[in-house]
Every structure is written in C-alpha cells, then in structure tokens.
Image (cartoon, rainbow, N blue to C red; front, side):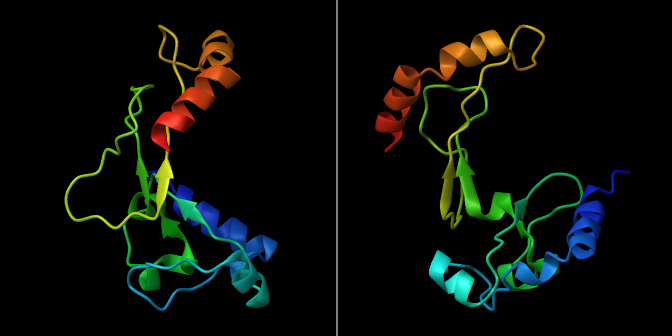
Amino acid sequence: TDNGFESLRSALNTTGLTPFIPRFSETYIQIWPTLRQLIEANTRLLLFANGDEISSCKANECPDGILSSLDHFSQTDLSDLESCQPTLSGDVLSSFFLMNHWKNNKAKVPSEKNAMVVNSMDVLEGRFEKCE
C-alpha cells in the first residue's frame, strides 16, 4: 500500500510547516479567507491534496488541515481540450475551477511536441476566454 498521505504529513511536521496550515471551524468553507487574513493569522499555507489515502473530509475534520482537492475543485474532463464544463454532478459546493489542459501522445504520456501546440498563447487565450 502507498503511504503518500502519511509521508506528506511527516514531511510537513519535519519541516515545521504544519503550524502554517489554517484550521477551519466550518464544516464547509463558503467564504475563503483573504491572503491578508491568512498572513495576519500566520497560517498562509492552504494545502490541497488528492490521491492515495487522501479522502474527502469536512473542512473542520481534515487531518492537519490538509484539504481534499476533490472537495473544493471542480474540473474539466481530462481528455477534453475544448469543454469548460465541470465533471461534477449532484449537490456539490466547489470554490475553485481547474481547467485540465494537456494532450498525451499515442503512448498516453505527455510530450513536448503536443505541449508546444496546446500551450501556445493563442490556444490558451481562446480557451480562457471561452471558459470565463
């Protein structure tokens, strides 16, 4: 089994960063603190994670304040470079929008050649305007 989440928590504790992660009293965060508020509270490290062992949690119950990105981000389909529609369904409160934007090669891995095309200024500006 992968212990990525415990490794992350251990690294945060070892480096002394854990105290800089805000702890939320709300179950669901509807209004996020401003950067100024985070700085004044000396908790300026908003940390989102997903993957192995990191599961959905109520904001006030997330271990060490590490929030699950799947609870706070809606995102576009990984394989669709055109859509602006999030892949969420149901009753979801999402504060952030993640626009997936890459194209793998035939071996299904990233390629510099594809990146040059899909990440050109014209392509990115067009998609940003469409998704605005």
